[in-house]
Image 1 (cartoon, rainbow, N blue to C red):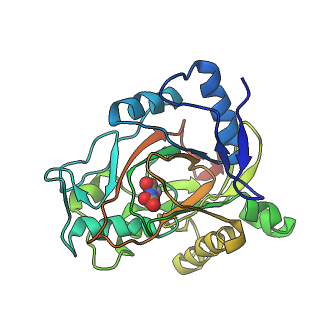
Image 2 (cartoon, rainbow, N blue to C red):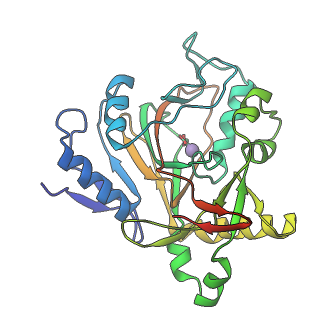
Image 3 (cartoon, helix red, strand yellow):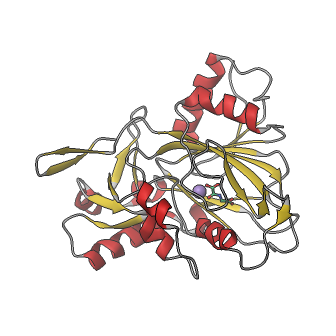
Length: 297
Ligand code: OGA
Ligand code: MN
């Protein structure tokens, strides 16, 4: 069975119109979706009426599910992440200025999910359960496009570089927010390749984003500047896909090569309930042997 695909931009992204992901997903369809993800990096499906149980079951077909980091509200350590302004314990909107809203606003920096983990995410799956009528778009950018356009000499300079990714680093950039000590303890700094290669297609891309702190072996500020520059190159307006959510949209993105970010909405007025499952990658992105570090994939 071939998927029915419409391109979302000239560079990446596809809307798939031919599937009901809850009703009839056999192993062939899972393989086709994985192949489409390798090729298009962001897959949009409309009208997929997932609940947590069906979303978890579907996502687990793609690999091991990650669990969320510690949350003071009690929803850490679980496979379905709450991306929401609603307190699940009371079903009420979090009051203005609540730390959870500040924590959510960290998603408004360009990032790739779980790059602060030793084995970072393969893909994320986000289901729009309740979406505001205005605002709260999600933006996506492919770190392949800008990599492909980079002059060969500049590409060569990136080969073999390794970056430190640190949840504490990205949380410190969120205005007025102090990450809980317990969360920071769960996810100490890790190292990842700056250039990653898709093992199925051989295509390469930058790997950076808000959690990327500095380059190993370089002066901190010089490395930070390079990592920011890679984000800027990748997220130029013409390379960005902006998703305007409808209820029950379901998006799968390839965290190995995609940066994404949330955008603001009136959190005092509108409810937003998004549920995310995250499929872990298959291993570290660098091989460490003695003193030397090399990109694994
Ligand atoms: C996420 C994320 C952005 C958004 O779910 O990983 O970054 O728009 N979401 O909710
Ligand atoms: Mn995210």
